[in-house]
Image (cartoon, rainbow over all chains, first blue to last red; front, side, top):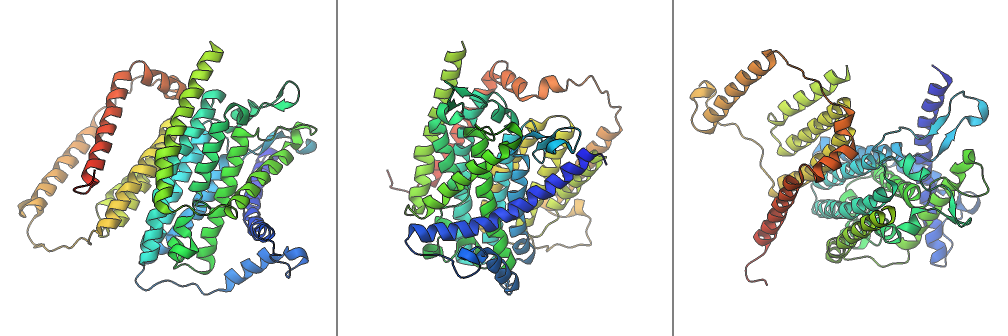
Length: 341
Length: 168
């Protein structure tokens, strides 16, 4: 048990714990920002400025009765939220969130701020995102209710449609960055042009960033692409029949998927943990700031834009976003070839 | 050691696929067997093949299988046959299936008892993403293009079949 191994185990547990916390914080942020955007107060009774509201929510969810429809397939009904939550956590495991650090000299070798270093890290994120579709499909089907089935099928069809544009937007960055490892892609964005413009891939791939964010919002089933779980349309879509902790697991999975999409966007387009004024070992502060900015943008989008109808959503994904992503990849590849020749 | 774990999972789940009454369970067990195969690819030092297996096979193709099984509401397997008669003598599909099973067991036995002539296995030079991309677009470019046309044909066929009569 070398100190490095101990540090890595602690880091893994820490990342898990922080992801759970991030879901709770997102619940609060969502309600507060939604309220302020709608010119009302939001939660303000529980704790100072309502900060303990997520705690109250968690306690309420834990004490609710756990229901299961009689005709539901028991095994799949129980398995679906597990698949959703597991894939959400697993996708974050290959995302790096800081430079190598020695924790101010406590450990001899450098600790990577990443749970697992894989040289095909981007593809692993993508693969686990495709697996999380199963949680939703199985939830919809095993509930044995028409709202759930429709919601589940629509949601999973939406997710696999937008996965294509998601992957092609990533491919644009891969062509420039020349590596599949997230860590190497971030390190390619260190430094600045002209001394003050950071070398983010955002400036090299603006269309790619746009496509990635839109596809990411559609992947995580967030507004304006949240038709499958729209309260007004489908009761609650695929998680209609779930209550208490299973429902909480779906919620958790959704927020953690949001965090993962934001973290990958930060790593790929916004330069990860590189930023001015701070030493490299404190780069994770920049990472947190950037991820928080994207998460705020997510919440902002939800409460600003009206929802897409399902056929508009699918038409947009296939007829607009996918061709745009393909053209983006072509132009990027041509540009790289031209400028490196 | 991990090889035995993944191999055992792959074999057990694949066998369970055909032993399920509920077709949705069969699909899920098949996905599990693909996961085990992906693990085996990683052990063979081909992480790209492993991840692509998950993305394409387990993540996309099997989702479509699952849709079809769910939407067609496939009934549970019912077993109405005379259990006293030997499988090879039962009429129709049972006889064909039993004959296939016998052929498979014979083949497995032959394959497992052959001397494995393990040639030199080029490892990292073949399986890196760079090498795969290069050979795919240069040596195997024709096969690549033919495959894309095949997929295009399948897509066009699906659109034509799904279109209702009388719609332009």
